[in-house]
Length: 410
Image (cartoon, rainbow, N blue to C red; front, side, top):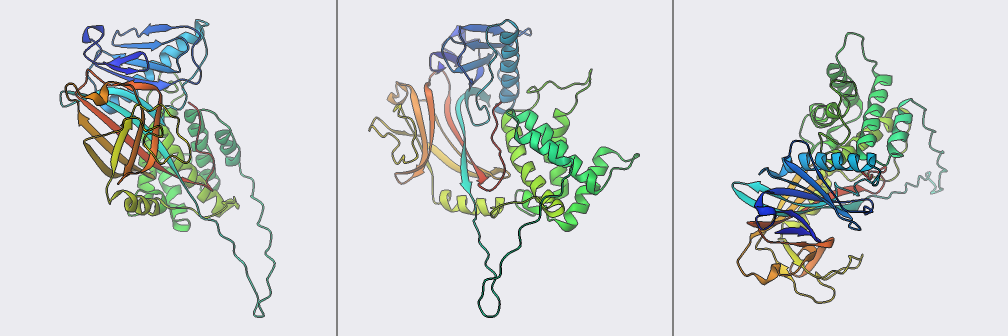
């Protein structure tokens, strides 16, 4: 059985094996009572436990990783809606884009995974001192005030939001308002055609290639594909009968990653045209990859332990209390999986009578030659059995320390 704390996720050893796959997220607050919700189609069941800050959505279907995230997230949102209207509690998920665990199917095998998004803060601070021919310091002029533009309103609403989906909607409106002020949309011009034209004009003055994975892609086509087609068009249908419910068609991980890149694009354009300041220097995605390649290409191992010690900034041991430590059989540095994100993945097939799975797992760490560089912590603990493979997925995300807010609750 695969459990998060005392809550069953999926597997062959409970509920007569009918629940093949499932996913668990953290809640913003524990529910006041236990509650089980079965979706109308009969395929998904969502469970809340009194006092527990985890929710589990499980399904009778055998589904792959990406579909598990889409359908499982949607099922949890529906259950939260019903809990709210029944007067049980109006709560939300904690940060589903940063950590989750679950069971999915691949090539006939069931895989229990733990996912974690680990922020990697980087930045550049610069001070420029100008002197005359005699070495006297020339006093710098004060930076120009930003020239107000209606896109600033949408930007502020985006940054003050607490929800990723709402924040993204407002940020894309900020981009559209910004571009429209520079290159107004013609009445007979389609939205996609106008967006391509306006971004192409911007790209002549402001290089947008830094916002692509390698800097070699066509930046205009890349932005239209990853932001407009893949995210914005799936969030903005607000009129019935084609309305799109919030939190229903996109995973929070995808929206979170898209927001991080979009806010950098907006700041770059607004800075060049309307004096919006950007303190410090920007670490490009390519620069980030170079740094992480240097860290992980020499090798990477992933360890886990039943040690329930919470992470601290000075962690140097997988188990600070010297509890048992186990290493996953296969670990690999995948490299870039999306702009500003690189991945480490590790796995092993479950072995009969293996002592490493006798206790709940709380700490999962990556490192090399005894040194660790990340700690993923599962407070409730993860119990592994009833599946074929156990897998750890760790994504490392570039966070420019001088960039605007990119973290929201969902």
